[in-house]
Image (cartoon, rainbow, N blue to C red; front, side, top):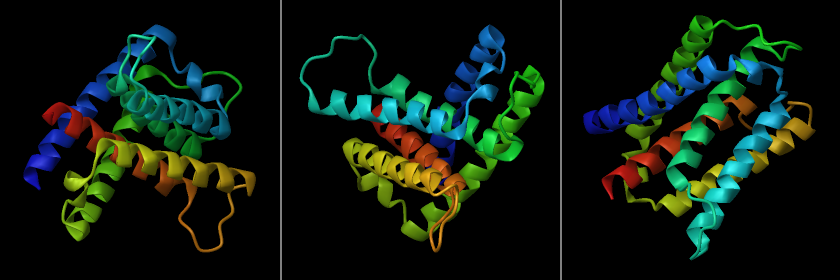
Length: 179
């Protein structure tokens, strides 16, 4: 499992670097996005990955990697929005936005380590296409919870679903890097 932790950190460092660069380009403009908008952004990326996996031809020269990175970063933004709420104008300085990213990634990595222990790294025997399908399933669950105004009866909340999407996307990127 130490290899998983190291690989996980490598993937997240790449995602964090892109997040920081985009913060410098655009600021925290994403702070105005409501959760359903972030969910839809993630859905678009997951759906594109699925299409790339099913289609023989590509018309845009971007592959699955950039889309999985997008899923991770948009999911972290959603977790930040859950914590801080939506605003009318961007309100985060770069340093605070990075601190929040790091905080939510640390929580999400801890969840991965706990589940990875209990499941015995079963994800290593999964296909990238299955991880994509699981992300899409989590998105459908999140959309339903959003439609239910955030209420669940016996299920995990929205935050746990975003965390699972992050972890599935990291696993997919690890598989892609190993191929």
